[in-house]
Amino acid sequence: MIEARGLTKRYGDKLAVDDLSFTVERGKVTGFLGPNGAGKSTTMRLILGLDRPNSGDATIDGKHYRDLAAPLRVVGALLEARATHPGRTAYNHLLFLAQTQGLDRKRVDEVIDLVGLHEVARKRSGGFSLGMGQRLGIAAALLGNPSVLVLDEPVNGLDPEGVVWIRNLMKHLAGEGRTVFVSSHLMNEMAVTADHLIVIGRGKLVADCSTEEFIERSTEQTVVVHSPDAAKLAEVIAADGGTATPDGDDGMMTVAGMAARRVGELAARDGLVLYELTTKRGSLEQAFMELTRDSVEYGNTSVPQPQVGA
Amino acid sequence: MTTTTAPAVIQRPGFGHTMIAEWTKIRSVRSTVWSLILLVVLDLGFTALFTALTVAQWDRTGATERAALIADPTSVILGGGLQLSQLTVCVLGVIVVASEYSSGMIRASLLAVPRRIPVLAAKSVVFGLLIFVLGTAVSFASFFLGAPILHSRAPVSLGDPGVLRAVIGGGLYLTMLGLFALAVGAIVRHVAAGITVVIGLVLVLAPLAQLLPGTLGKHVHAYLPSEAGRLIGQTVQRPDDLLSPWQGYAVFGAWTAVLLIVAGMLLTRRDA
Image 1 (cartoon, rainbow over the protein chains, first blue to last red):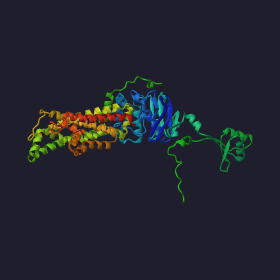
Image 2: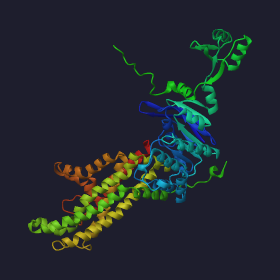
Image 3: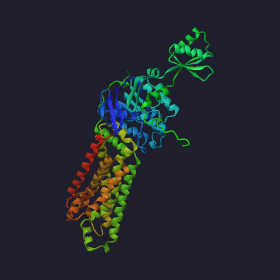
Image 4: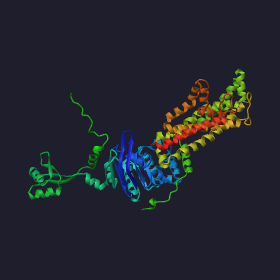
């Protein structure tokens, strides 16, 4: 279990993480979602004791990372930034990590096989592709068979096969009762992977709920209606508390604030013909963008419009 | 919950584990191997060259200079090689720490040993031992290569007063220099900047200090880290030396200790 309480980190004038509190529970994949620059990586670095918070506190199973006896046997971390020497082989990188924890050499071979790096284990990691580098990072994270995993953008640079592999791996690890905390800036990726979501924007907590609840709450339902009596139907809908917006003049409308079922009932009551009645959910990605719009660091809103002919 | 996540009593890995890991790090990159090969080649090559030139130029050498050579042939034998090969130790000392920052390795290192100080300590011990073993071996090799070449003009043997100390002193000097460079690398955290600082302190500052007027210049010069440290490689204390060989080495050690303490304090305080 990971607990953050009032975490705050300032770099110069910039507030990277702003009074952030949350709990990451074991046995679940918890997605840590936010646009680029929202403070995800910084928060993870604070949890892992790489950076020192200006105030607040982060603990893992009740302990500060710094106080863990053999940290890699409790927490496995994959950082977004590279953490390998390009001139060192994958094997030697994992070997030195294993040695710091008093782990057996055999464990190094095990994780190399587990992530499928057997062919290149004796090659220097500087020549690795992004995907191979990610696999090496995952191997390092799993080395100590930790009960807590902190993964910063693990699918970055992976091919589709690799993405599916990571997804299944994370679900499998959570299924074993481990704590899996994974960051991403891709809403759709998290929607299929995470059981729980912690969403931040500009270093502040935006949402902390189950993925289902997040999807439910943040995607507005609308109803697409096609009717030859569109104008009449719009009046009836308005009288019943909905809003109907015509899409063009061939009888298409989008109805908000009313379920498809009620639209159908109203049409039947007044004998109005319906050609089409479809419930539509807004896209999750759209909802995520709207939720974090106010907190995106570099939005598109302030881009000056080109002056034409002036 | 499966057995894998059951809370087990985990023993804190000891300093020995950290040292073994640091040894793995040092031996598994090519820059170490190349620097050390260069150290051996430069040292022995220039020992042979300097002693051979000294012999060849003997008839054209003045009486006072000859007297100085005969009084302390060891300095001629060891000095030439050491003067050049020390640069490889300066460079390697900076690289073993600073490359962790340029490559991002430091994050992996500190995640594994979050108390941080043991990383610097283990690195210092392992690197120091490596340079001591190799540096002393090279120093002996250099002596046994140079002494026969110089023998016809300025005979010297390992049993002469101060000679054994001076030869081992070559290894001791390189060891302290390596730790000095390592500390600078840990403070500066940048390979190129670190090397510049160390080379500047070792090569540029000494002649600069000698330009200072009168006894001030003499004192400043005597207490500069590398100048003080170099005395351990001399068999005899010259009349104008302010410090004895061991005093000089202690001064060099004090400089290095201060830098290592600063490096340790910064390591625990700074974000990685």
